[in-house]
Length: 108
Image 1 (tube, rainbow, N blue to C red):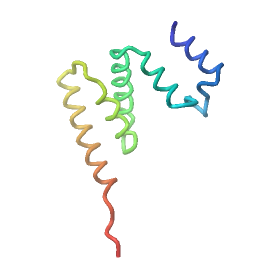
Image 2: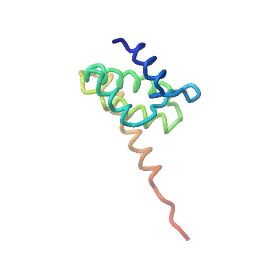
Image 3: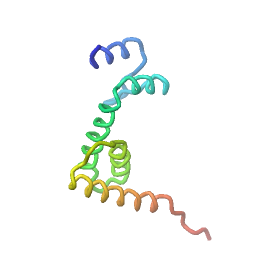
Image 4: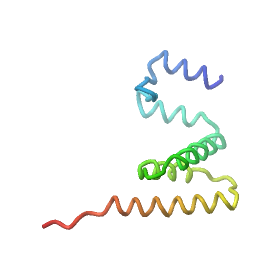
């Protein structure tokens, strides 16, 4: 069964719904089941592709930066030296953002 037929089936049976430009699963269990149906190698490549796209668009947007690193870190395949360097820098930036976000100001 191809992905298009799966999407139509899910939509027709209200397992997913369109919310603006995004789809949302009706339940987390449905999302997990569908995710597990995708072979691991394809899932990892999808995460890397999404992470790369998010990294390119993450300029001055901490939320996108954190999401991009989360996606890229799910990939365990081979990386070029340039990718390793880029991802290491992105992880360091994301770590600094996470630290900054989690800091509390001292109360009076």
